[in-house]
Image (cartoon, rainbow, N blue to C red):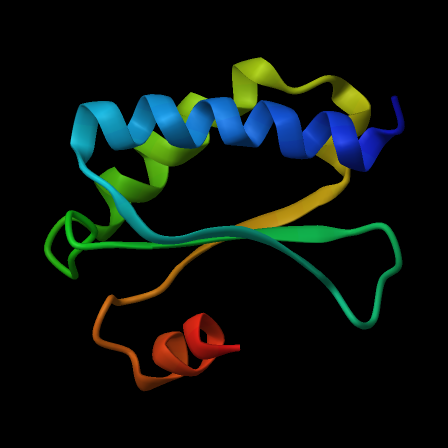
Amino acid sequence: MNIINSLIEKLKGAEIKMAHEKGAFDLFALFMLDVIPEQWDVVAAASWITDENYDASLRYIINCIQPLLSSKELFSISGVVLIDQYNPGLDAVLEA
């Protein structure tokens, strides 16, 4: 299994676990960076991610996915980006 398929499968499992514990995601996806091939951002939006708990939500997501990934998979992730569920750009992504 190549790295991206393995990464996707592991992140699917993490998404299910987090959704069970915290609530469903509006978006939980990998986006490839334009400027760096083979580098990805994990992008998430959910009603339980708010400005007031942004840092705690970010730590929670990182703590859920980090132990599941190999070193090579971890190095392929550039960052974790949290998007406010009311961001108009989120609607555009979901419609696409």
